[in-house]
Length: 435
Image (cartoon, rainbow, N blue to C red; front, top):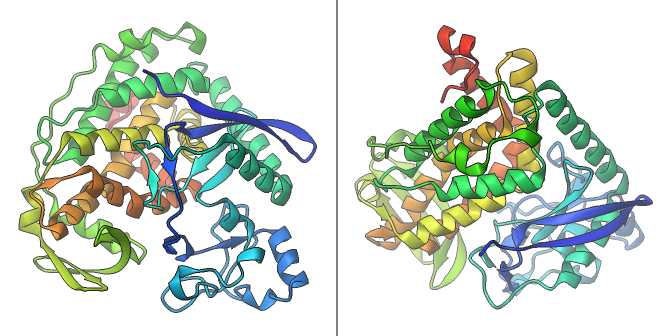
């Protein structure tokens, strides 16, 4: 049965905006008051800054560090040396709870500008208590409506300007390549089926296997759309015709120690690790033979040898696919797709459709990070296989940095650089995407 998604409407700056959720209604969440959401950067809107000034707590604003580019925030709350909010007190309780900023009131949900004149209700999967697979602790519609109202009240100008920009970017992609940037209903339907095709006959390297999947998907789309010069996305072949020829083999490269080191070198501490059935923060340290996590109960080690022998369970692969279906529905992800499509078609004269770019981004920018983290989780636990819980914590440690890469153009730049660098003279002439 196809999952259903939340929908709603909200007034932003006098304009009636429709929003839809990136996550299905089956998603579960119940705050455990663990304090993990109080780690890292906490943004403040202009309204938050005004409230802090009125409440006599303006000294809590960080005088030096600034929010990441592309976010709706103007400043940050000061942090302790360990990276936690200065207001995080004993027993993980907030010292200014009645006056806490908007992003804290709404966490783990946020309203993002959409790319069809709409908005997207997203979820921060850095919180390990968000149940991707679904639970009986479902989210009430009224809570999401309240989140939408909070964002509409505190970020109206930024929200509307970005909505208009994303819509213009989407329309430009469609004007340059009419068979590009499909309406969301068709786009998500197709990508859901394409993600279901991902199989891991050799589960020892899902990162490389996913690249084979993306390459096969790109080849099928190129043959069905670009070579036949389809100039109207409304006259596209059926999903069955597009996906039927997709065939690929499992990667045989095995465990990549270099990739593992790169992922952990780029990670922003602290590391979230399940200990005693609850999530805890830990510090990761790489060494010659593997990884050491410094946790509250001591050090836990995982060797490269133990990680290389691990295989994925069916449950962990199923969770991975659920996560990918959330990722492709995000406005930040679709912004990255639109930007990449526009660049490749405008400046490199490569015939490309957004399905190809979506597969490329998943395979080249996300999966290489998920694989090492899932292996690290299982190995530190001493398991002989990668469970759904290991996958969930790999997602928790990956999701925030991946979203940042989408928003600040890092991922788009890397994808374009990789594609342009891999195009031979022959493929440049044919106008295909190389992986």
